[in-house]
Image (spheres, rainbow, N blue to C red):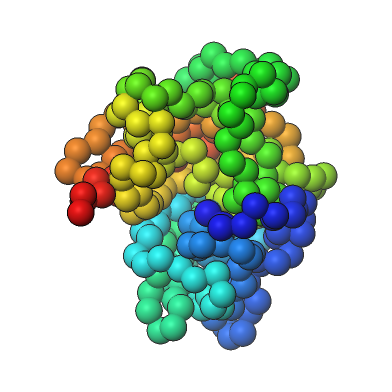
Amino acid sequence: MSDSNDIVVNTFPDVLAAITPKRVGDNWFIGDSLKPQRRLFGGQVLAQCLLAAYETVDESLTAHSMHAYFLRAGDANQPIELEVDPIRNGRSFCTRRVVARQGGDAIFNTSISYHVTEDGVSHQIAMPSAPTPEEAIALNRSRDDPQPRSLIDLFGVERQRITERLAEAQEPVSQSWFRVNGPFEGCVRTQQAALAIISDFSLLSTSFYAHPYDRPERVFMGASLDHAIWFHQSARMDNWILYDCYSPWSSGGRGYNRGSLWTPDGRLIASTTQESLMRLWKKR
């Protein structure tokens, strides 16, 4: 997160214009970062790698899954070099590997799989129950201690929390409504980039809910270790999206989290997983 309390609330089109990588070779791209950031936000790098890889695939293909590892902390004051490896081109699927580097060191790598549109049978589980976005807005207005919003505002995202963190241990589940500050009528590629950014909010923190700390950052060293997204259906991300997260497990300094993203009318548009570092700070 940023150290500043004076961050301007951005619109998402402005965010996208600032972070979209620029092509400098057949499979090489350079990306910039929004500022200020104390440590490079993982959701930004997810979106940048997704957008860079999209520039190397046919327009008939859409990303359906993304599997990534966070390797080193990034620096928002340095450019990000993105190397896309066109590892496989098939008739209905293709795969891209992307490595993000700063100062010659890899900070992030991901594999992204793309698929042509096909007909097929369909099913989905029922959407979990949740207050409406309007009810969540009223709920947050009634709370005495609003959560800090600096990183959310920097990336042009609005969040309305449903789940309140307690000082005591609680069930490791969390819900929030998200949308980007629009209007944003982007294509499926840029809508997925917006979803990738949103997917890195809320997920990591869910594993901390099971433990009796209302300020876990004072107790744990936390960081994302890996991240996966399955893109099921497209949706406009300037409309409200419910992010429903839960943590099935934590141990050994790591926490495991899963999430699902839903439209208000009950369409499941994406699923996520993430393992995070939750190392106890050593007392001196």
